Image (cartoon, rainbow, N blue to C red):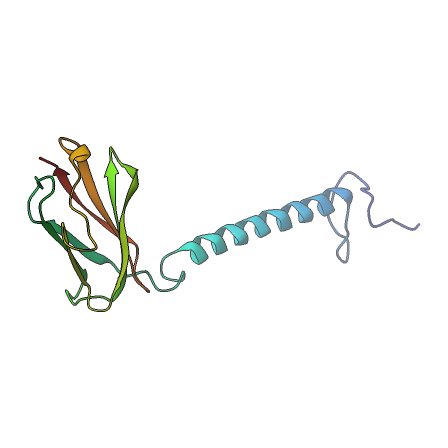
Length: 167
């Protein structure tokens, strides 16, 4: 009598003298393969996404934006500076500094101050000097924020702010 390998006989799945596959055992093997694949994919995703195997982490910048005061006067000179250092070492960092005015967290149309590439982590400017106009009369009483967005190779982007109310 010839027995087919994918049929269940006698109501049990015990192999007699060797491995005997039944429909139930094939389903069981396929299910176990599926579960093991899901398990290994899940484990791999945890380890690959983990910080130790994801590659080097971006370093942190420390950005200080400091103005002459918080109340610049219309038509007068007003000075500010931006200092950028490595947060861990305190050493200056070559970077790009993007400066703009914001109002309630939104960039002011025409409020672009400028983008400056610096080699030693420092930028300063005075409004009200040639090439940098003073605060206009239309800005009087408006609560503005100067926003500095700093980027540098190998570092996470950093920001700093300075609030002003023009008088």
